[in-house]
Length: 550
Image (cartoon, rainbow, N blue to C red; front, top):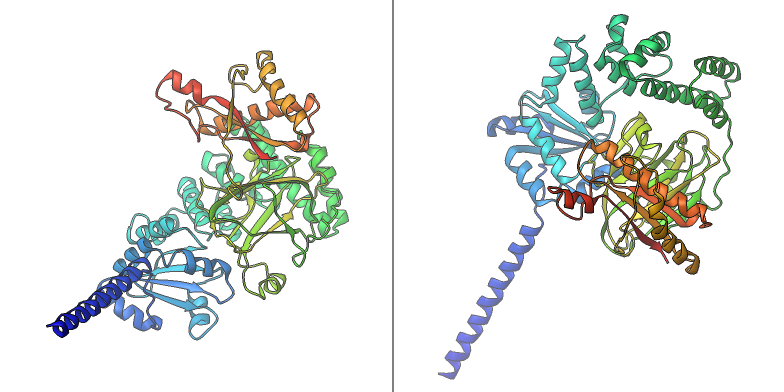
């Protein structure tokens, strides 16, 4: 009897162990679903896609591409992504430098990595994207690929059938820009078909403003008809475009030592009499001093939420390194001291022993980058939670690339480069890297209606903060402005930033060192209560401060 009971117990224990093992295996499997990339050549993959009534998804990558690795480690292994792509597509990966890769790169005109192709059963491109994107955006790209109204091929055909329709062209160019597929040659070709008199129309102006440079016929037309453009689209917008274009060509001449051409450009620019003309000319002749110990081998280690005031060389740029102490979503602001300055950046994840050597040879493979200059943000750039664009190209464009999830113990490198010369420098504000501190709402901070002029009734409250800063000499703070949700969001954001700056300017006038004070405007993005009532909106219209270092 005892033997039988003992035997039963052993059997039961074995069964439990097997069930537990199966449970663990199933749990592990459930937590690690990933896109099923089949090991098939393109021809066989197309045949399978046709047999299964599905489209073919092709991930075009290279072995050295940083964003390709990021997609592999952060997107292709996402449960929702795996479920969607495995159910909707036959999926393959192709190294563009091996086996049939070079032929496919030539056939499909692959020029950047990663590139994503969505093909029908004939191997024809219905949709395509480029660059790394977060999981939800990657799913949306797949949904667009399956929707005939959103497929790139549909918009390409619409543009081809209506090559002179400015609204269609603008929409198409913006789509290509968002997919990292827009090239200058397409803009030049478009305007070559546009009669000059039609350049002075809303959507042609939008295309001109966003994409056209000094040597284009449409920019020459703008200069010849400046009063008409100013009347139609605003003198400030026209002047901003002129300044940006001349700044770019002046700096290009300076860097390439084109002395005679530069003199000609300066004379032409002065004749246009823009408000910032002399400042731009002067800045285009500035020489930068390289930051000490800011080469990639000796990158400056970031140990503080605020780095300021720094400067970089136009020839070398500056490298920064940080290792986060906890998993977080990284956002940051890179703020020029002078709004005419243009700083670009790239962010890299670098954990292998030879990664520094690889970055020295090639700066390709950034997980985030932004090379544009955004006039509405006065040259400020960085990473933001409010965009999904992970790589922003050269020229006028968005100020921010998308925020990124970073992990504790991993090493990240930030490369900052001055596209236009500057001697005034920049400050970097990194968020979420350090323990969060609760913002303190400042009471009785009042401004003139819809303006950033600080009323004298506000002085006693600000003076209290000044006294605190005088006593705590190591304390640094960030002043934050907020609005309610009434009115234009962009104007609200600008007003909130101007009001925060007004508080900072007042404290500077009271003797607080400028390098201890920072400011940021959030507009209506961070309400503390409901905006449905006037009482709620009044609470949301506030100024607060938070300690960034103590």
